[in-house]
Length: 379
Picture: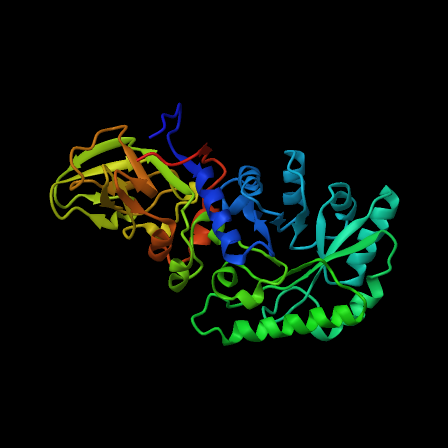
């Protein structure tokens, strides 16, 4: 375990794991398809700047963010190369997007005009990716409108149509019929653009699930997210690539306390000792992004053994029953998710306990938890 001065709660991030996962995605799609690495939501909680650099080192051709603000964070940190703002630009953001050389998702004429106008004012060219709605029922043009939109914006001064894309609703399902139908709707939209004289270089639809399962969706570029951080988007896809979880959430015992049978622990006394027990208090809680639903459900690793939570997760502390974890002392290392002494609990298992998905477990780890970057996790 790394030594840490001050509060011992940290999220370790393995840069080696991030690079390994990017290379796994490249291997799956082959040399003719580019990989856009998604680093939105602060790199799925891992730190967008560090993750972006690791992915570019491993061969990512582009990076994906959700907002202009996220894109500008990368630029201010000196991250170069194509950065695509998948969530589009809101009114008033066009000038920043163009100044930052960000490529922006567009599905309205107003947004295209704003970007083109900002580009002309700055003496630059704005690059856009046309967003098509093919089944997510979220953002984008209806497929029937794509050809006309392409015709309307293709010759706008200051504008370059760099890409066209859509987003899967259920590519991680066992039954792939819905995903296949989306592929065909997207293909028809791309054909409609071509008929309008618009042939963007970057044609992208595949998220992590489709990278792993649907070669027909790879087109000229893929857009993996969760798999780059070490998790398959569904259990039945886990064997498709050798992925390495890239974050370990760890802390140290703040205090241990011996209690007698019948002693309640925590708010409202929802856990009561059934025997003489040892309780360890951990210095993190739901304000750090450790879900309150973990209360009386989740387990942590202490001395490489699993120890169950005892009572409700507090805002800043969490209590654990370490009676069966050997002799536990103040300052002993604890892993909330990750590996320790040959044992492991990963974010997808935590997600099961708190009734969510690994994506949310990872992105919930709060800003007051420092990210500590390592090449690989120690034992």
